[in-house]
Structure formats: C-alpha cells, structure tokens
Image (cartoon, rainbow, N blue to C red; front, side, top):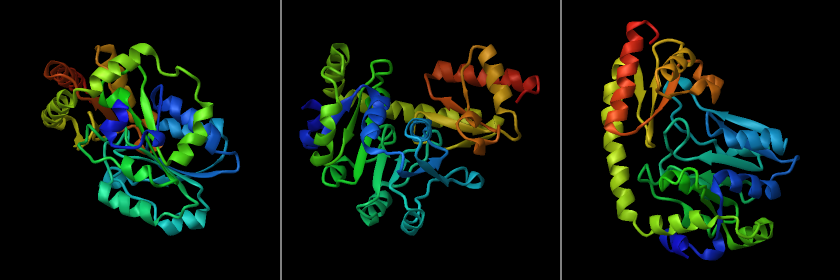
Amino acid sequence: MELSERLNVNPDCLMVGAGSSDLIFRALGQWIERTSTVLLTDPSYGEYAHYCKNVAQCDVRWWRLNPKDRFMPSLPPIEHLLQEGIDWVFLVNPNNPTGHAVPPGELEHWLRTVLPSVRVWLDETYCDLAAMPSLVRMAQSCDNLIVCTSLSKSLALSGLRLGYLVSSSVRINKLRPFVPPWNIGTLTTLVAFEALRDPSYYERRYQETRLLRSEFAEALAPFGEVQPSLANWVNLWLPAQGSSKLADACRENGVLVRDLTRTSALYNDRVLRIAVRSSRENKRVVEVLHQLSETQLC
C-alpha cells in the first residue's frame, strides 16, 4: 500500500519484485514467445537484449540511435512498427547508458498512437533522478503499456533488490500466479517502507546529485566531450579511440569507470561512463585522468 499510495496507482495494477531483473525474467517469461518480434534500442540497457536473444530466442529488430548526434533519443515511427510487424517495443527512459530522455509529453503522445496489438515495455528506473513525471498512471489504464522501475537505483537500495511493474489490472492479475510467496525479503521490505516514507530526503539527494554532476562534467571537460546526462553519471567521449585501454588504466589506479564499447559497438572504443559520487571521489577521478593524460593514455 505504501508504494501504491506514493505512485497514486491502484494496488491491483502494481506488482513488486526483487529488482528489475526479477521482473524482466518473470513477466517476459509469460509474455514473450519464440514467435514474437521485438524492437530494441541500441544503445540501451543490455538485460532486454539478453533476455530476448538468449532466453526467449525471438526475432529481434533494432532501432539504432545515431552516434553523430551522441545518441540523442528518438521514437520509431508508428509506420515502422507496422512494416516490421513488431509485437513488443522496449524503451528505457531516461536511457541507460546514454543518460538522455524522450520528453514525457512527446512519449505519451507517441504511446497513444501505438496500436493495441503492439505492447510497450517502458523502463523508468532513472525517472526520479531526472525529475521527470512518470507514466505509471497511464499504464494502469492501458493494457498494452507496462512500466517497470528498479527502486534499487532511485532509493539507493543496491544489493537489497526491489522493483515494480505497473500495467492494467487484467495483465497484472494474470501474472500474479507466477510470483512465489515472499519473493521480497523482510529486510528489503522494512528498509523500503522507511525509504518510501521520507521522499523529501531523497529529493534533497537528487538535487545534490544534479549539482555534483554539473561540477563533475565541467572538471572532465579537458579530457573530451562530456555529454549531458539526466541520471547519476556522465558520458565522456574521448578525442580518439582508447576507452578500453583508459578504463583498464583507471582500474589499476583504483578508479572504476565503464568502457561503453562493451554495451554497444556503436560506441567504437571512444566513450566512458563515469558515475557521479561525492566531491572527494569525483576529484580523485579527475586526478587519475590528469595523471594518465601526462603518460599519453588519455
């Protein structure tokens, strides 16, 4: 009830799980068939590609974003969905790992034009961090829209594993028999209750993260092109290839950054995703990059 009240959705339209991965495997196991045709964005969160390609082994089509405009988001035209015979569309908004988002108004308009035969899975895991309105209330009255969110990110509960789905009560209730009892542990439940009861604390933390992100992006500017992000990271585009080598060198110096080439070949060994942390930790990242640039690794 605590979560349904915070989201302002009917409890019958809500299902919780042990993180988004649990919900992805549990729900898609009932909804995606080998004969399904799905549309995935590239680059985007890799768990959807893994499930569709390796578990469901269905027909996967790709909506590839343009590296020339740094993967700014776009929505596939409705006629494209019809021509390709798409059954499912998977969208992550804000997108991971790009950090960009389709404006909610534009997305809502697009969703209202999608035919009922096309199901849309919308991942809003970073919605709170981006200060974007959620489309959960639209999802509860729309049978072909499913909104998925990992609270492990927005409530800083990594390791405790908690997430939720919102869709029509008909769709959610058909899924309930496949959820085992006590799928959410007692510790996770207790911590989540406390977290959900203090939204003002999290709003202060989100504001702090946005300020730190802006300062961090400015400090990283000497090393390449820093892409704006709505989430708790920035993407650093290097002047030339070498992100994998630089990520390895950073790790050897006690700093973990992510080479995004491992998430999409479109990144072409040029982009690092760097998490926004405290001022002290962000400063340490910049110091290591300065040291490595002096040895011509950056």
